[in-house]
Length: 204
Image 1 (tube, rainbow, N blue to C red):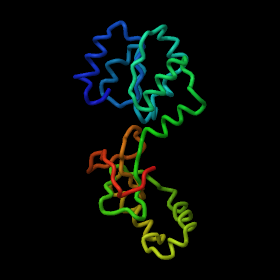
Image 2: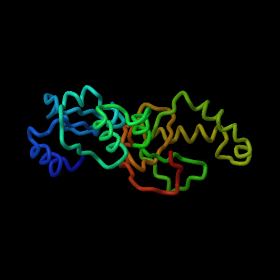
Image 3: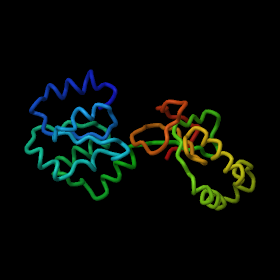
Image 4: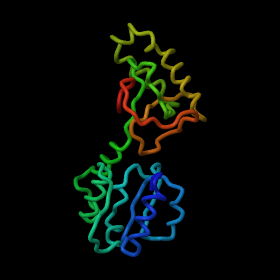
C-alpha cells in the first residue's frame, strides 16, 4: 500500500472482490485501519516486521484455502513471500526470512573517506556505544595514528554533532538511505529520505 494506493491498489482490491483470498503487507499506510476487520488482510508496519516473508505463516496459508494465483512484488522480499506461500508457509531454506529482512534496507554510513557529498537522512542513536566504537577504532592504529579525524575526541564530537538532527539522543550515527524499507531509527526533521547512490559513503 504505497503512494499509488488510490490509483492502483484500491481498484485492484475492489476488482478482485471476493476472489481475494489474502493480502499480506508490511508497508506503512494510513489506510490499514480500513481493513482491520477483514481477516483476509494481514497488515503491519515496517517497524513491526522488516520484511513480508515472515508474515506468510502456515496458519495464514491454510486459512486462505486453495488459490490459483499468487501476486507479489518482484524484489527479493516479494519472491521469498511467494515462495513461502507456494510451500505452505515454510521458508524455501532455513534463514530465508532473516535474509529478506537483511537486504531490504540499504544504507551508507559516514566512512573516514566520506566527502561533502555525503547526505544522511537517517540518524541512529549510538548512546551507550560510543566507548565501544572508539575501542574498535583503536584496532586500526596504522590509520588512527596519522588521521586527526579518527582521534577519540573528534569521533565523539562528530557523533554529538549529528545528534542535532534527532530527538532524545546525545550521539548519533548518520546514514544515507539508498533503499528504505524498515524504519530503524529517528527520521531527519529537515531532509527527506534520499533514494540515490553516491560515492560519498560506504554501503552496509
